[in-house]
Image (cartoon, rainbow, N blue to C red; front, top):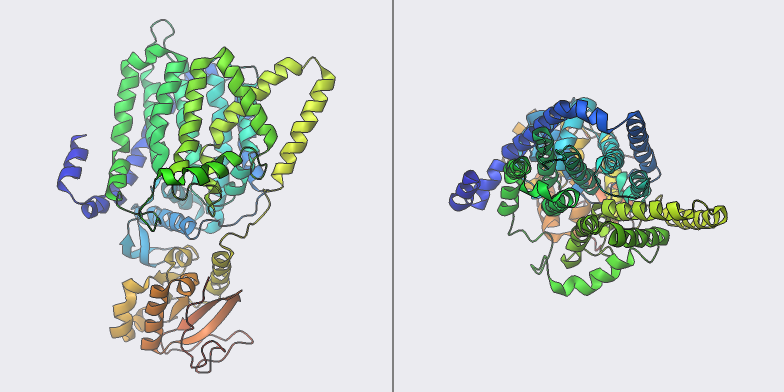
Length: 577
């Protein structure tokens, strides 16, 4: 706390951000080491809590979650944030620093950072990607596989946590809740992307499972918690904070769950020590939030959170549960049954789970882009999917205990739930129209990257995409002076050629188009490859004067008009979106 206070009082935001690449990574290292150590110490006791059947079911749920995400197309839906996460993970894997590459060399499986930038989003997701890339290599395919594994782990941990929890629940509720989460359509839809929300769901569930284990391992006579269980809880809770800004809300949820299990835990020294350790481990992320507190996060009028957004966001976010577009109506009915069971049989647990749902779902209704109707914001439903699944599991288990002796009713109710759920699942294999222009740009980059010579450099707005494809890339601001004043030296460094990518952003943002146009004109750049999507043009210009790669059929030769939009060979004017 003294370090955090000194940092806030005596360092400006820029100085704090300069610490982030190292402090967040080392704090997450500490979370991983403490969590792994505590799990090893607890292993003999965990074997007494969980029998072989529990481990088998958890393993099957992990496989189910991974496989079910394959029902959705493997794609990117957040442009270009997913590649920012991947590229920071690539940097962590190679340098151990949580930085995004404005200018980097990324060839032959090696990586050299030449100009770095600190991203405003938390670095938990890139940290996991960094470890994953160390083993499987930095690639888009590997990143997609990791997110599917995270969904599977969320199912397994939700089941194990509930199975261990000393709560009064209907028989079969842990398994039913895990299955409900595994077949939540929006979870599967986002589970085959590289968005951060599935990872945030997984780490929050891990913290909740650690709280359940800590409660289960307490001394039943005194209420004293296990030091090893407290350490596991501290590590899991702190790690969860590093994934999304609102993940800090995991702390009150854990406190309410511990109170629901045994109110004496809130007076336990080990539990309070866990809170102190967790806050210490989470301090680098809290300082990260402090350093970017003035960011508008895309809100052009500066209003990030405001009551004025409440009406529109509530219409879509409450509509999520009743329209059947993203979530089956049968799930909503079962969740209400679960809430009813909690009100009658376990009110304290109901308060804890209700708080988890309200905090993870309700935080977005005040956010300017928090409505599920707003672009790709349906991903925010993934953050609250686990508590919703808990209510569904409780409701399904409670109803089963009532109808299982009535075969006709079981058949009718089961068929109705299954048909309604399958109808909602039709949403899972869809692509969606959202940002299809940016998706087309990504597809074009992947095709173009395969044709580039080795030892070439691409000047572009989206360096993360090119770097993940094993290409050297630089933002215009990082390389502009060298292009204008030191082109011969650049040509010696990159004998494969100096290229400029006229990308999606050059089509839609005038300032980027002006910068790109100036570089092409200054260097006398010539188009060597072109693609189109609707009224968008994606062009690769060669800026140096070396030999030009073969032109794809149907495109003008260098020096000839680039097309009807730019008959003088200059870059086209930005297209309207």
